[in-house]
Image 1 (cartoon, rainbow over the protein chains, first blue to last red):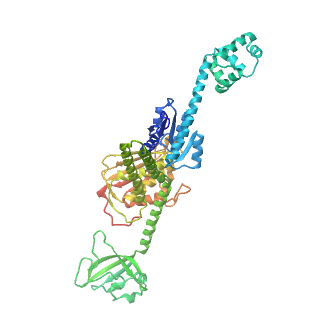
Image 2: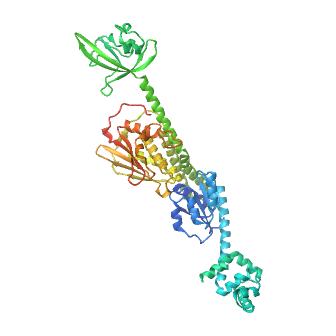
Image 3: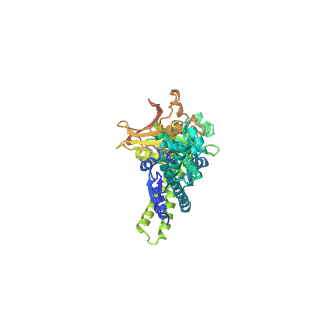
Length: 211
Length: 358
């Protein structure tokens, strides 16, 4: 059986199709929630509690599947299903961030395969997101001055250069730098640079701006 | 028109030159000959005298004062004529005046009109083909997923029979749904005799709106239905009135293809207009029609669409006219246009003679 904590959302305006897809997905051991419209699904968001993916009909009345995908903005992997797919629509779907594009009627192996892949992606995305969250939390612990120091240190400047940049002496920068390393739980400059890389220098700067 | 004066036994006393020409004789050749020579089914029986001068083979019917019979030319070819008979006294003799019109042309015209209407119906349905495919695809999708879900449930250690039962029920429902799509489609493309029956317009309107449902979704258009309660039935042919509705709805969709998606709404209203009339109003929010085109659009071969035949509206108007109703267009005060179909309430329509469905 597959990870039972995983959740699959199905959005299709056709009640009967919704029910049938839900059964098929449930038969593979996933939990399923169905929605008759894009709006109903948006009302249910956010969906961050567990790895999840979305099986989405492109032709929906009011808010279409593509519009919903754009709105979600890669918040979760999307498998598009459509009754009459053409190349243009497929391209549109992929641009909107689809992980898969299947045509109706969809066979169990195609759909369940696509779901397994999408969920794997969701798990990876969650791992990355968690790691990022943890790193950002560490950045939050830095004082504004320590942030400035970190931002400059990771660009490869020597302590001396950082000091002149910030209008202070090397000794002070050395002390700041030690605290930055401790708070960021980095054991080497290389590690600190990798962290800065992951959250982005702007991540460091943005946090500073928020203060 | 050919005119003949017939004696008591059906012998031709006088014929006009048109008669001779129509049948390929000289006038003199015909005088004294029995009228059966020209119209074999026109039997005169001197012992029986009825109002029109003994028309034994044909029943006289108030609704069909004209008889349609086949006539034979000098060269043996047959053709249809319409005959009116009037009996009167001429001196001591009972004579019958017969009027005949060549029906061939009218028949031909009617046949062409019928074929044309059928063709437009087919081409209209052709426009719908992709959305009808979608309409069939939905139940097929549900059926496939249900069956495959059931197959997977059945290999489980503990089979959930309740679930399997529900699945089977859903499959049955979806099968009905698919055949309903086919039924509606078939009803529209059917070519056959006109069937004038008492019709529930609300049902017709709903059927056609269902037929275009996925077409509307694909085009990002929604249809708002507003059907008054207790709209009385009308007399008419279901397929023909469906054709009119279908045509007007698709036109409304087309009229709005350039407007922003939020405005793409077609409202369909069915209401009682007066004691004797009911009215269907189909309102779009497109760009409306130039004032000088409001009536031109109903002329044959008038079209604003590159792929259009320009026959939809003209045939729709003919159909509505045959139902003793009226079809017209008006621009809305704010934007777009409304097409109105006014039809007489049930009893107001004479039960037409059975015509052929176009």
